[in-house]
Image (cartoon, rainbow, N blue to C red; front, side, top):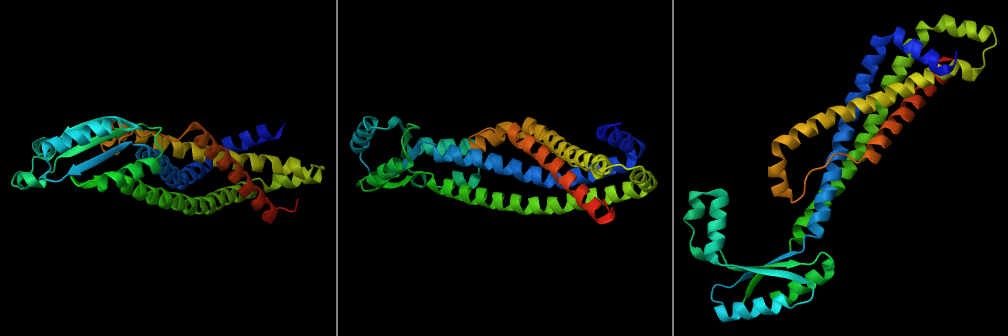
Length: 289
């Protein structure tokens, strides 16, 4: 009987303990999977905002229509610009009221809603060239301000950096939790099978033969725990996406996505390796192999 058969037989005979261990490992992995899901989507949003290709040129209230038209025509022939759309003060106010319908906003004067030129740039235009264009536009006499949405990208970069740090910290926490849970389960299994192990040693079984099933059990607990966590977070992701996808897409500019299959596979492999390592360490402490 090979190590896999013996491990399967042992897990089946003590199924409740192993299921509890798998669930405990899964709960530990849930935090890590959730953090990675947030990091992946923040990265997508950050990349989208970095290449959003949009500038909002807010005009001064006294800017003559002729001057606005000249600026519009000049921008349309500027290299890297794919489109220009003029939004009057009245249109800006109407659009905002349609989105919010707040009485306070309705009471504001028309001057609170400056006219603007919305510039769409090509995705191939480098961010540096976009920022240089914004600086040149700010120097024009009829321009009040220019929004490049670079601040949003910087804020998202900070969130992304924080998410990576949180994921790293959670990785250490999960490491400790998995080692603790798997080690405890392997110790319990060893105590129940102590007589079997001693008999195997007496009849000349090699160290690897005795150790193999326990390490396979630990690897199975780690991998299945990671799978349970991915399934739980996946179910929550599916619910949130079906309920709020339209709102989130409108707010973030991109559709939220689940973990890439390569990252999910890495979690499964990592869980298996971690469980196997925890089982091996437990055996070194409790068995003289």
